[in-house]
Image (cartoon, rainbow, N blue to C red):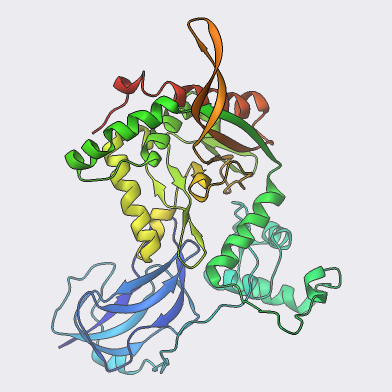
Length: 425
């Protein structure tokens, strides 16, 4: 038997640490390879970490609620399977492991974490994992962290710096916060936000503070598109084994038009605009618990309708089943929200930072419209939808934000005539 260390595995390029929500095992418990080991939360999504090897858990090295960096040791496992010595798994000497104290972690359901404020994404502020946890616990504002970073070596804000600052910090005056003065009354139902809802709330508030939002609207005639889909959806599913929804069609058309307006496929970091090479499109998915996740389809401009449909379907299933990993929610350069599935006509979506725009697709509805046939105008019933385009007015003006919307409406209207220009596979 060998005693090895289990480490917190990598969960995506942008995920640097995770919070331990709950352990699924106890010390001295036998586990099988692939069995649930613990549940963690990242800034993107909750995830379940499986056991990398079969064996008996000897020590739990991190407690519930702890902030753990990726690659940090989380447990000691006694196993017959001796893994290769790599940077991820290392054999430990039995006498060394025996000296490590047991945490005696009780496996209890996760309820909620302390309310935290969003931390700044500015590159000039660097926080160690413990410092980040302290900053969130004490609600240290982004501007305070920026000031501390300006005095710190290489802009690294450490635990020692934060603790020294907290000793001198004046209490935050909350007398002007209206919610602090509101109390529940008899018969009211008080609902505590869960961790995901608090993350969403924080990000929405931060986005509205950072970016001046402007929303433009346009009506698109999609009569031919609707007729084409209705005509081909049965044969599409029979041939490719997947349903033909509007989502892959919309994504393919949007990606085509974004290539004409590359400034919209960008992110803003401090005073720099980074125009992304590829179109990585996030799309909002409503989950059963009332929360919202935004999976990302990578390199949409390189995908045909079939792989697009397959990826969208798989991501929706993972998001709603709770099996989606943080990496699938990372790296979007542009986001869409299909509010039409709720019979909404139009909306004013909030930009997902640090992106610069977001598009809401409304309900496709039959409406009377003026059309030109053989040079004569007449009233006809057409399938139409409203497109709502919100953009960051710091860098996107109406010529780009509104111009994109005009081209998109035209491209949706001519989709059938240009079907040969779109790839299927």
